[in-house]
Image 1: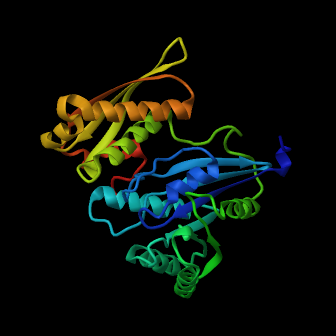
Image 2: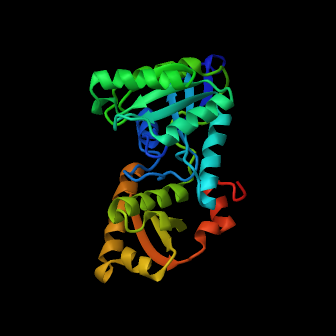
Image 3: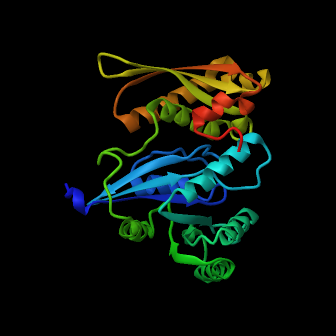
Amino acid sequence: MSAETDRRCGMVGIIGAPNAGKSTLVNRLVGSKVTIVSPKVQTTRTRVMGILTEGDTQIILVDTPGIFAPKRRLDRAMVSAAWQGARDADAVLLLVDIGKGRINDDTRAIIEKLKEQKRRVALVLNKIDMLARERLLSLTAELNAMGDFSDVYMISALKGDGVDKLKADLAARMPQGPWLFGDEQLSDMPMRLLAAEITREQIFLQLGDELPYDATVETEEWQERDDGSAKVSQVIYVRRDTQKAIVLGAGGQRIKKIGQAARLELEAMLDRRIHMTLFVKVRDNWGNDPARFSHWGLDFNA
C-alpha cells in the first residue's frame, strides 16, 4: 500500500449523448460491473460513482445520465445531474459513439454548451472497431473542428481497445490528496439501490420496447440472514394496469424470468446467495413524485 503523502485522488466526469457507452466504459475501467448497461438509450437515471484504485492513485469515475433535449421532469433532472457531474469533476471525458459513422445532434449540442462554458474536456471516441480507418479519421477531424479538446482518445469500451492508455493518462492527471474510499471499494452505490438497478436492467433487456421508460424499481427490504445470504424484496412500479400485465406475463412467467436473471446477476456480483421476491404495483405518478427523485439523487426542481 502506498504512503499517504504519495497518494492521488480525483474525480472524472463522463458525459455524452444517450447510449454513447458511458456505463460500459465505467465498468471496463473499474474492472467490475458497477452500473447497468442496456442497448436502450437513457438507461442511467442518476450519477453513479465507480471507484478505480491502482497503485497510489484513486480515480472516482462519475457515470452520468445521457445528455439530450429534455421533455419530461425526469428528463430535466437527469440532464441536470449529468452537467453537475461535469462541474464537480477534476477531469471530464466527452464520450462519443462514432460506430454509426456520424455525429448526432445531441453530441453537437453538448459540444456547443462546453464551448459556451469555456470548458476544455478530453474527447473519447468509442466503438472505433465498427468503422473503417478512413471514416474514423474523417469524423475525428470534424469533431476537432467543432470543439476545443485537451486530448483525443480512440477506444472500444466493450472490447477494451485503447482503455489502458486512457486509464494511465487519467491517473497522471489526478491531484495529490487522500483517498476518499477504501482500496477494495468499487462503487458508492448503496446495496439496496444497486439491487434495484440490476432488476431495472432486466426489465430493459427482457421487455424491449414494451415498457422500460414507464417502470421503476425499489428495494423495500434487504434482510441479512445468518447463513450469509440475503433476502431481497422489491417492487416494480408501472403507470398502468396494462403494463402490470406485461411485467407479470402469462401465468406470472415474465416476472419470474426477470427475478431469476436479476438474482443470478446480483449473486455473481456479490458472491453470495440471494433470495429475491418481486411484486408489481401501479403508481401512475411515480415520474412526478419528489420522493422518487430524492431516492435517485436527482433534483425534482431541475
